[in-house]
Image (tube, rainbow, N blue to C red; front, side, top):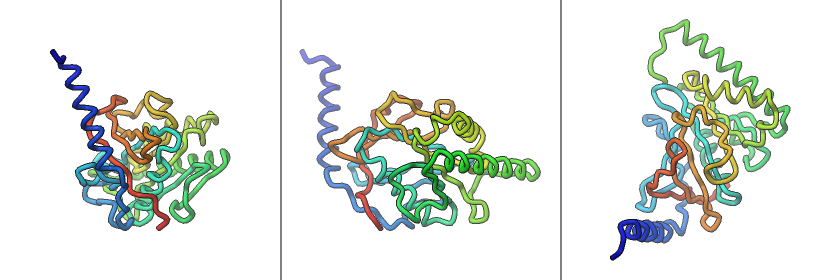
Length: 244
């Protein structure tokens, strides 16, 4: 008699095979100015096998939403980040700051840092802006969080290696991770390797969207994770790489 566990395993393998077939060819990315949904606070980063868009959250009514990316080498994280920055660049509600030594196309980020010193300066300025905004909110009765062109969401993209070896930078990242959300300061941190790995924001994982890209054979195929537990839900594939 076939066990329930064996039947479940067969169902998982069948679903995986079907999803791989349907996601074999990455869909072309829509225009960058159509990716961000300002009403939902999300960016479309690709599509599921059924054709519906896969989205990552940028903000909620409580504030900016942090994001963690766990990716194997050559699994497509640079393409994913490129799509995110392109969408943010096309919106007047968001500004991108980026501290990674690779993979950032010129012109997408408002501010970039490639050295440890530049990264430390970027994080210091982000922390200063965070405290300035929090002080202003304390003086005024702040309602539900909504980014505006006058006070855009600041999304900071970091490679784990860009700050983890510098104690002062790591402390600033922790401070922004725990305090920055209501000020509209979001962290997006990429760590190499599949989960479990050295995800650098464990204290905020219950408030962060986690994306795992783990397929070298199909770059850009991924799934979302809740509280460091793989959801078992459908996988998506990011939009095809583009230079537009």
